[in-house]
Structure formats: C-alpha cells, structure tokens
Image (cartoon, rainbow, N blue to C red; front, side, top):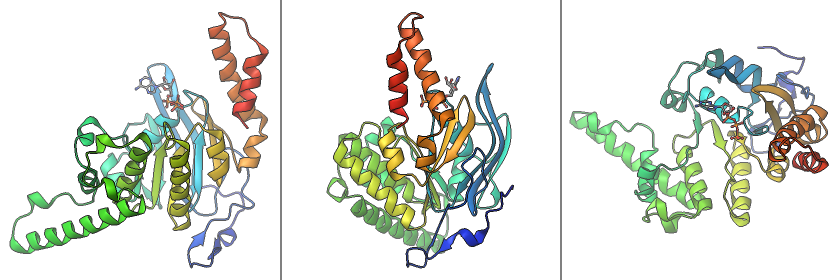
Length: 313
Ligand SMILES: Nc1ncnc2c1ncn2[C@@H]1O[C@H](COP(=O)(O)OP(=O)(O)OP(=O)(O)O)[C@@H](O)[C@H]1O
C-alpha cells in the first residue's frame, strides 16, 4: 500500500466525543489513487473487459474507513462493473484487492459479505412476493439451520433465529417500515423499497455498505430520509461507498468523491475539489458532447456543453 505521507495520527479518534474514530481526510491529496490514513478497502490493477471494451481499468484505489465515499462518473464509466467486481458478483481479468487487510479478490459474493462488505440489491421478482419481514429474515447471516442435526444444534439454531427476528424488527423500526412488516414487499413505494434494500444489507452487521444508486426513483421526502440514514450509519462507524448520479446528493453528503471515466480513476477529492476539477468537467462535457453529436446527427451545439457544466455542479 502506498502512502503519501499522511499518517494515522491524522485520523481524529473520538472526533465526535462518542469514542468512535471518525476519519479526518485533512491532508489527503486530491489526486487519483491517493493514499488514505486508514483505508478499509484497497484495490490494485483491477481490470475487467467485455470483448474489446475495457469497462474497468483501475490502477490503485483506497476507500477511507468511516467515510461516505461517492463513486461518480458519466454513463458507461464503469461504476457498476467496478462494484460488481469488488463485491465478487463479477469476475475480473486481473487485479487484487483487500478488505480490512484481508485479500478478497476471487471470493464469491456471499463470502465477501460474510467478511463485512455488503452491497444492496434491487428486490428480485421472487422477493417482492414475500413479506417485508420475510425479506429481512432471508438476508440474515447463517441461514444453515435446516441442515443442522442434533438437539444442541437445533437449540443453537432457534436462539439464532430469535436473534435474527429481533434484529429484523429493530431495523424495520429504525427505517420506519414496521407498519409494513407483514405486507408483501411488492406493495412498497419506490422509496420504501430502497429503505428495505438498505435494511436488508444491515442484517449482516457490515463494516462497509455499498449502495448502487440509492436515490434513483425516490421522492424528495424519502431522499431526505435515506440521506439521514446514510449519515447516521457513517456516524456509527460504518463505511459507505455509493454510486449516484444526483449531484446535489453527491455534493451534500460525501466526505470524499472518486471519479471514474472510461474505466479509470480520473480524479479524487472532497466535494469542493471535484466541483472545480477541470478533468472532471471535461469528462462530463465529453459525454455530453458525444450524446449531442449523436442526437444532432453530427452538429454540436453550445447547449450540450452548458448542460454538461451544470451536471458537474
Ligand atoms: N455484461 C456486459 N457485457 C458487455 N458490456 C458490458 C457489460 N456490462 C457493462 N458493459 C459495458 O461496460 C461499460 C461500463 O458499464 P457500467 O454499467 O459499469 O458503467 P456505469 O458507469 O455503471 O454506467 P451508468 O452510470 O450508465 O450505469 C459500458 O460501456 C457498458 O456498456
């Protein structure tokens, strides 16, 4: 792991007076691949291609523990592919990555989750037919009870089931979904589904949660609620890495932003660094330019550029 001179002493332990270490990114260089004082996730030379297209080509990436870190970039930049690869839901051509110091490349998704790095998923059709509570219980760790034999193990399993049930109820309470507990998940609104997806991920008590477009299709009231949940999780010590397109959300909640374009990390920094980063503006403008060119049948207008600039604000 590289280090650009930022020491652990710059992580302000107990910054909020709660005894929890809160990451202070002061002094971390706003540049691609920059070293963090206490990275929870470190990735090196991660490549994933589809035929002749290189979707991800990340040289070095570190995510600081205890932060809300956004992974942003124009359409097709490789954000979802990188998420899938790092969480073990897609293979890579090459690369290695560690989570909390342990190598996790090559591990399947459920083993990555067991180590404390979980991602949210959109509810599948099958899950939408189950109740909200059943969805929570299915996401619980150690779903092996049926296979266990012997009275001690059966006793142990039933204790575990009670714990899971209690935890599910607590999380539903926290996400204000208790009143929907016995409804089928398919009857939830778009925003409530996002809350349930987040609550399900928390059933394994992860150290890091990865959210893929958590605000997509969510009404403004629930966006506020989701943002509060994300901040609260971070304040409790959970690391959040999220992909999002809404710039107001990104700039408002992120401690750190990593920008991908054409599979590579082209910039990193605090929201203020990214807002004014010419490489980032150019990357968004480039996409806008391509789209404008396509829709105009080749003619490029100034509007596209103006919109592109707007998008980066
Ligand atoms: N399974 C696949 N087969 C072929 N190409 C793929 C596959 N998955 C992704 N790609 C391509 O890889 C590139 C990166 O896609 P990816 O979905 O990771 O980008 P993204 O940044 O998440 O985009 P968006 O913001 O639009 O969701 C795109 O060119 C996409 O078309």
